[in-house]
Length: 222
Image 1 (tube, rainbow, N blue to C red):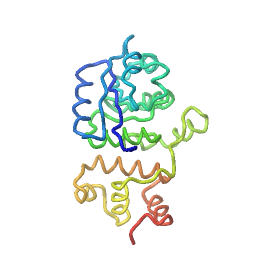
Image 2 (tube, rainbow, N blue to C red; image 1 turned 90 degrees about the vertical axis):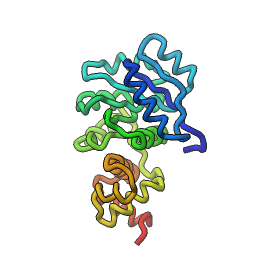
Image 3 (cartoon, one colour; image 1 turned 60 degrees about the vertical axis):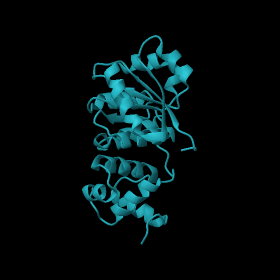
Image 4 (cartoon, one colour; image 1 turned 30 degrees about the horizontal axis):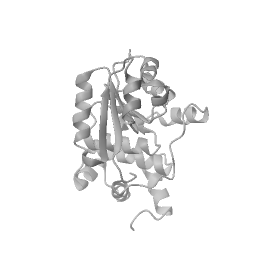
């Protein structure tokens, strides 16, 4: 956070889905400012230009939806903004296409308010954000895309948030996700999201490696 709310535009073909995302983001409090909604039509680019968002939350349709058409509707200028896609269900081909198209985030439609807001903040900070259920088997594809220059790699060395430090400390103590969720009074899904973000920021491939790196850096309370 830079001391001001992150300006967010909600985009998608279906008004009902956009309304649902707006309701979720309104629960995020003052950290998120919703600056408008846009369909994916000829007026979308102009609406985005007028509202000057910092992040676009894109409600994706089914697997038959063309990401090329979506990105064209968002315009080349908007495509350079961090875009977090919220998909109806996990689809490997859609995820690959999203990453190659330059989207910074991929979440599923059952995402909670806290997780969605955290994803937006992470995307705004330059990280690639993936739903925990989509992370398994994706790290190699991310590395391949990064090495080929099709996407920029996640920023390693980004400082952990206070919440991420809390989660990491409990991971180091050997607590499973369910107990971490109970201790911090957050959902288990949100715990998984924080762990994915911790792994990306520390450049770790596993929880064990993350704890080892954090220990070497003095990030854990012994």
